[in-house]
Image (cartoon, rainbow, N blue to C red; front, side):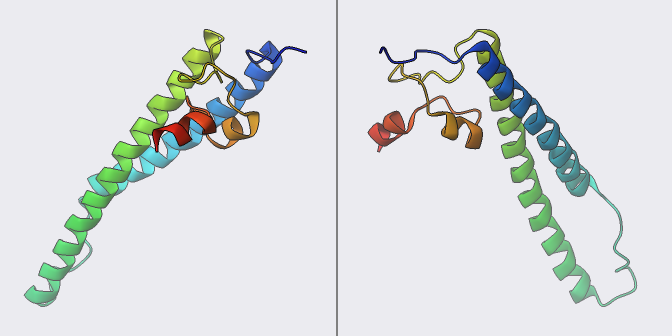
Length: 125
């Protein structure tokens, strides 16, 4: 029996549903991150010691930077998921871009935007 070269329409639909759900959740997470680093709300330190306020402002800056980095990663994740949807429409989803073989279904459920099989990933090391 020959090896399967692409996923069926039913399987692609299953992956599409999974990816759309992940995009929706990722957008909610991104909105939370953006609102947290764009928040200019005062934490009520105007009447406390200047030293404490300086520490708090430094911490707030570090927190905003960390949230900005997380937001950038989240935006990339969403973009990768959208690209996976395009591959589903083109019926090239789940095909390793290095080996040309099907990516294991379990891997795609865990990393639905994967473009490399485990075999190809190991070759990169």
